[in-house]
Length: 249
Ligand SMILES: Nc1ncnc2c1ncn2[C@@H]1O[C@H](COP(=O)(O)OP(=O)(O)OP(=O)(O)O)[C@@H](O)[C@H]1O
Image 1 (cartoon, rainbow, N blue to C red):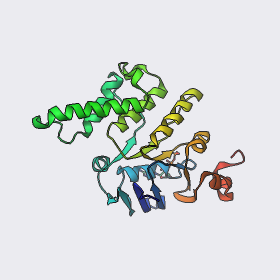
Image 2 (image 1 turned 45 degrees about the horizontal axis):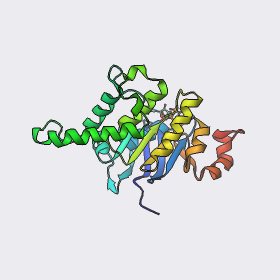
Image 3 (image 1 turned 180 degrees about the horizontal axis):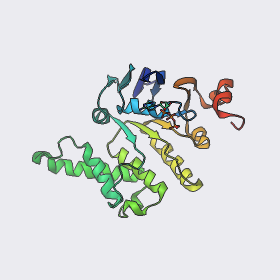
């Protein structure tokens, strides 16, 4: 098997006496979606925050592309190839879809303000933004203001903005939240396209989407991994049934 693009080893995050993430290890590979599920308070968001550098782990190690990035700032981790979609918070609603993606692409240009770098970086930035817009399926909406597109399209826009930084690893926190059936189906198709080029960590409550998409599934409860593996195996696990999935799955 190829090397993981992201490797987390024995990550623990304590808040005072509470271990919100407790000894969690996982590997993310290109071409695979690794879903993390668990009840409220299981530690999924905290885990995502550790991987993106938004929170430093108490103990453990994170490697991105084989390099140790433990304790690095989010900007450094982003430049090293990790893209995280933040729920709508980065969208400028009065700007067009294209302007939002273009700005996200620009944030990646290493010396955007340097006059010598400007000419080449302008073309590169536009090309990055164009690719991201296309991949996220938003090209037909490029000239609409972000505030006027649907909720589902705004979620696609967040993903386009993340793609514009050309990450190799994508962390997606509830990309289907608040979506109707048609929007959810479109997002599932988008995530299937994204995994071809990326390693994807998916935190999601929509179990239909999780079981449609996940190549690997990790279940967390109270900060700990109670099961991890092939989705069908995990679904059949008695501990998982008791703790989380219940009868319907
Ligand atoms: N900054 C913090 N300070 C103290 N406790 C925190 C902090 N962030 C999270 N926690 C606690 O850590 C535990 C895990 O929370 P987390 O938000 O990671 O769970 P989650 O699985 O993402 O839940 P949800 O599905 O509701 O988003 C919870 O008990 C939560 O109260």
